[in-house]
Image 1: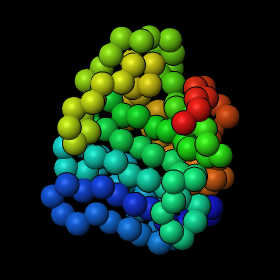
Image 2 (image 1 turned 90 degrees about the horizontal axis):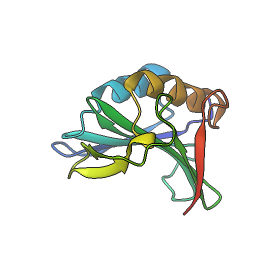
Image 3 (image 1 turned 180 degrees about the vertical axis):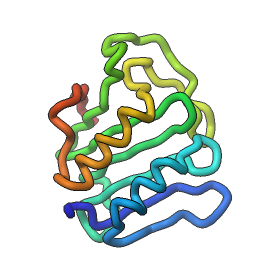
Image 4 (image 1 turned 120 degrees about the vertical axis):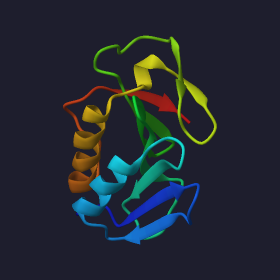
Length: 134
């Protein structure tokens, strides 16, 4: 299991930092993402949070975002039904943000990608990711 730390942003309670989380714990927090109280979660391959490499999942309800950061680059999971749309979607995370629709994904796309990262420590090659510089 490459994931050594799970960090969860919870706006009503204290943020959670869980070391060596089980898959049941990780998937449970994915289900808790609601965009208002539990807004983001980060998976790290190190025992301490860092800005160098992590998988971020945020959102809740209709839309989520999934982004992998590594070596100064960002890889955002593309919406399988609309990989090119620049239409801005209001995104429920803490304060409403807007993201191009091509990055707004359904829950059904989030879980297999989080599980792949949890098991392999990398992005799922069966999905399309948009590589960007930070």
